[in-house]
Image (tube, rainbow, N blue to C red):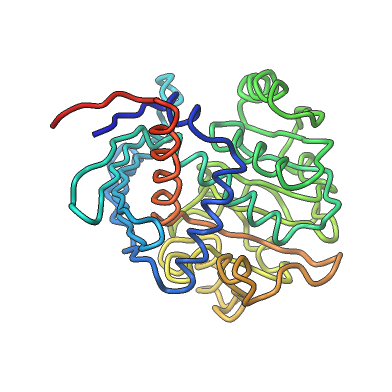
Length: 325
């Protein structure tokens, strides 16, 4: 069995490869070929959350179990907010193929999901990007979106200015776009062509009145019914809402379910799953001024395809450590 650290995972693949894997994962999921039970959550008194996420798809030729913990208070302990472990299993024999640090898998596949959604839904000439949340997720959001659109200007907001400074120092070495700190989230969003919200906030992080015509939003931070990272004012202004999974969105996306319960939104508003657009069975952006939202709560089939890609690339390049159980 191969054991892969976070450094091994990041060294094995680039974001374009992961976007391709995520595209395949979403297409298989929306075609009904993947087995992805709704994840099982365990919540703790300190506000932490652990999720158990299994997934299988014939197209991957493997199954995965990801255990991911989200502990917002970890920043006070100088620990990552998200920590995870993934186990990749051979579906021919049931043998475990690999155990890998999966916080990096989560960040890569979530960034790649936004990259794919941006490619399918944002304007072709989108050049300005707002990122809300300067953590690990924000970094892969930036890389993936820059990989699919000619982004020249990026405004970053986080409630901790030191995190923004560290983000800019780190990511200026990885992308060619101009990076600058925003004083508020609304300032970051003001006039942006693409917006990426990647926070653990339970309340809205920006307001609708700053949205530019034709803006595309990726909402990937919140995944519980009591969290509304994207506010009802934003959601109700959208011309088109696309989700990763209708089933998962109805079970976990507070951004959508709360306004639905208030009678402000109906399930029919969900135009498509992103896999349907990726497969060509439903169209992407229709008008230059269309406001679009991609809301993702995360489904294990993405972890599966990303982990299988990492495993294959690690084997090919000699990364990781092989152990006997």
